[in-house]
Image (cartoon, rainbow, N blue to C red; front, top):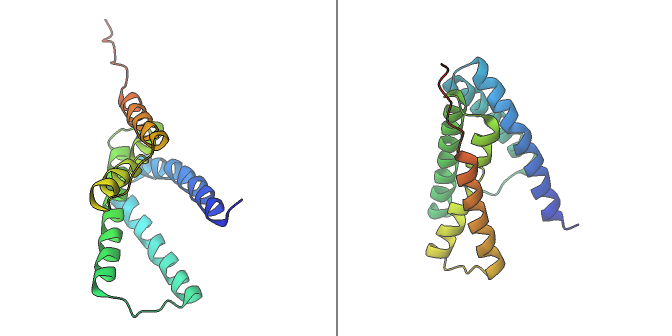
Length: 145
């Protein structure tokens, strides 16, 4: 197995477990408090990475701005997913739906980076969109009476 695939599978497992822990936390505390605890955990992990990796800081302005924007967008995405869970969304639906964010990445990569999709990748994207639509559909509650 390629090293990158091992890391991708590990990320899948970690994020899969995260969806359940996020729902459990928003069942007990507000989305804002859940997000703040999430942020504190990220700060602690960032400190550990700094300690272990000893990064090179000679970066261009665009790289720094893109990194900051990526972190801010990631944080806003996390906070809004906490809000979706707190607002009554089922973890099985909310996490599955927000985990389709790579579709937007694919669309932007095609539009902005001029990347190309082959037929199988296009079919996969269309299938994912269909899955998002099906996941977001909930049965209407029948009034008791």
